[in-house]
Length: 139
Image (cartoon, rainbow, N blue to C red):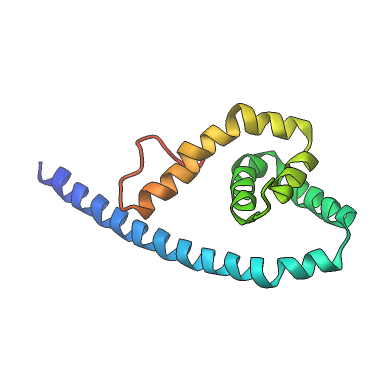
């Protein structure tokens, strides 16, 4: 029907715009994160103790709440892994080790796989100009 064709064109137009916006956002975000890693993180590491850093990490994780942790921790871990240049991923290991055991279990059991398909998978598809997998979403 004509309505179906028109709706299909509008959907494609929306996806193209969303894909463009995701690529622009990702570029800006990576530039910002790169700048922070070079300029801010070394200052933080010089100015606070490991105990203070662990306490701040706990505060951040608790502030996320369970639903926020489900969505946010996989992104945080992935970013830590990307920016941690140490051969043994010291920052990743410390952060992960400071997470409460139930959260580590949730990440291992389901959050990481949900992140790969429902969060990161959608963003990656849009960044490539592809249509996200049907049923994929943020939750």
